[in-house]
Length: 111
Image (cartoon, rainbow, N blue to C red; front, top):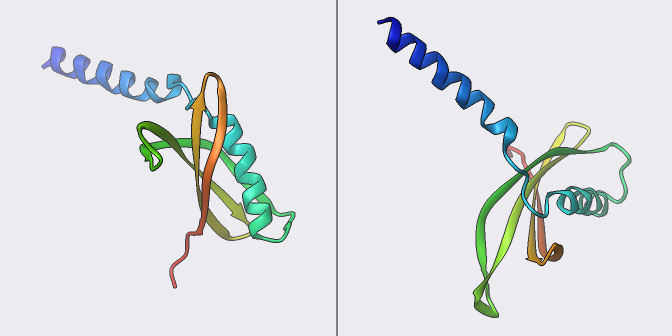
């Protein structure tokens, strides 16, 4: 019984430590910057914009012009006052630079 509980505790500690050491996606910094610009454009320059620092990498997309190439899709959340917005930014990571290929913004709301 003692061995089982110590194994459980060790696994729990490793599970908690894992996400803190996860490497951010390649184009995370440009995605946060672009999300701020996109939400500002979407809201006519509202000065209450806040952008979450967490960037989630979603499954990649095939380039419609060349199926051998894949685009990186990053999800960033933003806020204006009480409204919440999900933004997805599509990048072509190429040798250390991130080329923006597409973007979407969607208000997260129950209607």
